[in-house]
Length: 264
Image (cartoon, rainbow, N blue to C red; front, top):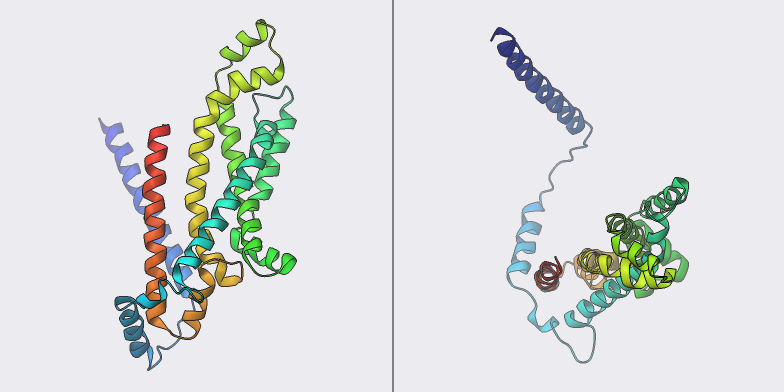
């Protein structure tokens, strides 16, 4: 009984010690933040922002003669869709390289995993900046940035799905004299198809959010007019653009969530 009480006391003091360390880390982190004075116009600017958000510019939704919200959202969707499709197509063959249950030598699959780790190290924003310099500003740079980053993420997820397959059907087909291509097509791909599709749809959700931001650095999409509206302090236009992004992302989340539940 005494041993049990001492053990509980040790756990109690250990919890307090961890909490004390966390508090010290937060104090140290906040001390390094530079706190500037609040400008006298901060209240007026804040009120203007909220006024624009509550009274959006509905005339910007559709303009047959120029740039409007619907074209920007459609551009964003196309960037996210193309980036996801390219990444999915390239990720499937590389995933078989990184799956450790399909290679007899561990270093082969290990090199594939290292490759995917390197590819997905850079975030979309950094990649977009690189591609904007390489190919010029526009949607093409956004597609390349999303495709490159999503390729690393989807390849890793695809490889994990392949590693969880059951080799029973493959062994049965091999015993019946099937070729490697037939084994791949009839025994392996049917087991991982739903997982591949679910992960691809989820990645498309993330890419829609990312594509909404990439335009702010010149990579196309709705982010470009949002940046112009912010820089000119056209808060009514900022409000309608943010409202459009929220509605688009929410609808895609609901639709993709429904599809992924059907695939589960």
